Amino acid sequence: MSAIAQLDDETVHSMAVGAIFNDYVGKISSLDFHRTEDLLITSCEDDSIRLYNITNATLLKTTYHKKHGADRVCFTHHPSSILCSSRYDLESTESLRYLSMYDNRCLRYFKGHKERVVSLCMSPINDSFMSGSLDHSVRLWDLRVNACQGILRLRGRPTVAYDQQGLVFAVAMEGGAIKLFDSRSYDKGPFDTFLVGGDTAEVCDIKFSNDGKSMLLTTTNNNIYVLDAYGGEKRCGFSLEPSPNLTSEATFTPDGQYVVSGSGDGTLHAWNINKRNEVACWNSYIGVVTCLKWAPRRAMFATASTVLTFWIPNQSKSNEEPSTAEAGHGE
Image 1 (cartoon, rainbow, N blue to C red):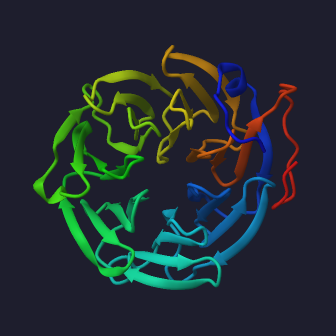
Image 2: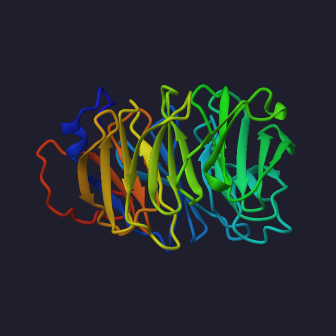
């Protein structure tokens, strides 16, 4: 798999399925790439967490978590340690767990949320992480301490993200409001608030571009907005087919020049955000995509529904339907 150079419209347009993993039993809840290692982690309704090597498209490890379930998942800085939110008994159980994939051990429990965690992200610079829950709170944590380090109470479904420098985090809440906080002094309140005017749907996903200049918002009715991360102005927006009862995800490419998203009709789309034009539309081959992320350092993205697929540039630009690989093997 090639390390990422400067992407162009032709390379993005050439992306095609390179590997399929179809041995999941249920919907894949979330996926995450490690920031520096060629690893991908997924969580699924079948209570599994799976670790993949993305360079050779192999499944490295599967662990099952029948007691708590596996909902949101993200890497910590260590390549074999992850954060996972619980799916079951949320009133009484630990809502978040710090897990070692190396020996399938829980390193720490984090209690506090009373309802499902819908957003989870790790600071890129230290041991801090954030979780947003349907209990209308965002909690700030430290991997080294069980106790919650801070709570933000708010209305609606909260969605959280750190910028790539770890200095700022964004919280999206009811009514399309995006509040920006200084991660070192969040207790002073937001230093800026943006409003996504005209869209009453809740923001279900938020991401910063690697250069910190743009923010990507996905709403529950499948509208996508790219905002200037400094002033909040809308740079561009795209509307896709809604997917009832499913939330979708969009992603920046590592250079911040393109956005890729799924649609409610089972297609995938890519746009050049500077030209504001669509550069590719693909059949996802796996129905409505609910998880989608581009690898941090590779010309590759992953999509998931009840099936996981890896997309890579296809220099022959063959558009034939891919054959299903055996679980754990790429083509």
